[in-house]
Image 1 (tube, chains in turn purple, cyan):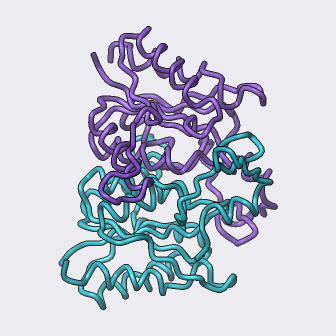
Image 2 (cartoon, each protein chain N blue to C red):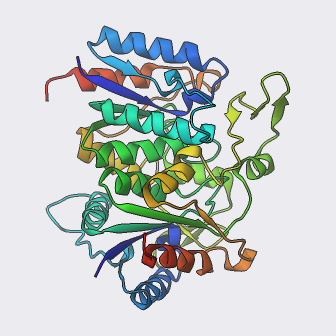
Length: 187
Length: 187
């Protein structure tokens, strides 16, 4: 049975355990085993190492054991996805795993960036710049081009965009289930 | 001569070319060849593929050619690093490259998160939560624990933190040069 690493900021939710359980049940319904990082048991007294180092190692080992990654790339504390999840997406790809990703916000990165900063359009170069003068990507992607395109190159599908309600932003699993369907479909 | 991939939001600067030139000169001074993603030539008419896909492929190929990565993890449009750079950090590690990282902001993630949102402390669990109820890491790290610990595990050194002036936030290369010193030192 293929193993799917369940990457996402879900681990920060007050009901992180329940969300992980639902995701693992959905994985099972599609014939997969879900690996949820929050399930890693870390012994804080193990060899005098700091807890966060032990968590890192446990997550990396879980990723190495996985065959596939499904990443929750919903914008998190800003215009872009949770950086821990984005790191894991890169790691999964470097290790040769197939990857899928979803976001519960349907808008483009540029549109969201406009909500966080006063962007200025340079008509000569046709470039949007933020208040630091730094360019903002305008490729119609959901996030940074490395994220969107990595999913196409190493999973075969663009990021699944599902506009969830504000209240269900981190609990709506429609996009997640769509990733499971894509993972289960014949290539 | 070992090749260093120069990851960072530097590519979004108005003077991205000049910054890349300075970084490559510093690499050469320490006996390395710097690979700067902005130098990738992308032909927008190549095979009808979208430009952002071609940029992705060129960057990934450049990363595969590198021996080492030095990542500019200065907070970018929020409390955390640029997601494109964080993705590349994960990819570098998955591909077995040695990695170093620096930030031009010396503060902890938790401290910065408090500047972007009204965090609430749960004294029973000793956890900080944001306005969505999601926990905020409090390990004394500069960013998400996956980022800080990946550098220790796969480079041998914690993230270099250098408090640059506001004006030089994306141009100060002291932290970058410290990474070069670490990369050049005998292990």
